[in-house]
Image (cartoon, rainbow, N blue to C red; front, side, top):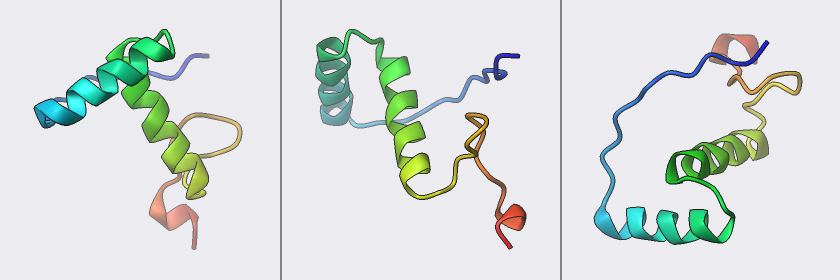
Length: 63
């Protein structure tokens, strides 16, 4: 089953948005998909993403 997607408003500087747009264009992704990719990779590198899903691990599950 695919993970549920939720809308989330994000305030971001114009310079960061432009850089994300260029990066997304290079990777043939939408800006939204690129932001999600970058967040997912950061969570994975920090060990905060479950292996079997794309959902973050809750703080109380790490204790």
